[in-house]
Image (cartoon, rainbow, N blue to C red; front, top):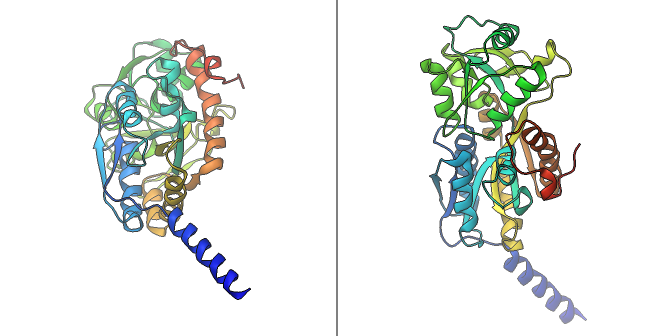
Length: 327
């Protein structure tokens, strides 16, 4: 009897060892946006904290273009063996099918989401706009005020559309190849402002090169080294929440042992004090969402925003084509 118990213990031990996937070479993460933007920042920080337990280096490749769809396609077309990942906001990666950019849907990926990121309304400090009400009134009088985003269908563009829809105004959309150049354009005076994510504008707000009018998140934003950025709901309580989750995406059909191993390593990194301190300094809300919970979170974000894109005439394909019902 004792021999059988020993034998079973050996088999169980072997099974555990086999299931603990370890990469034998570097892993490539394709960031489909320019360096310095929200996706790039979150990816590099998360990857740096995952590397020690992973045992291999990450190679991060910035491939901007097509509102992030080009780099995303490159990642999808690579072998689904666990050695090529991508990164993005949940909203951006979900928008590509309805925009006609890709046939790959949000359900074809598994998610590692370490941060929740609200959009922030900012303007060049040389403009006369001191409040969100000032900007709304200006847009009502002049629909050609230029506002930038990271590209058509990006999170910043979706925030602009929520804003325009809610207030019944128009604006001149100026897309760039990522959040960093879109924000630089505001600082340089190429455009009046934007509604990019908090970590894309935080440094420039602290430096006084951008004027923050409000956050489009449900709650005020405490920005380290600056103070409180009020929520737009302070004045407009029913304004739709404009925020999304950022993180890393892996093709859902990679071997199961890859996902199981990566989930454990990601959880340790996302819950570390080092990551939490970094996120808060950047004006981000640290979270740790993956697996089935991430799938549920992603669906909620997708339903909210894809129908906005379609109803506003930006998306050319109905979300119904992908089984996404109206909220």
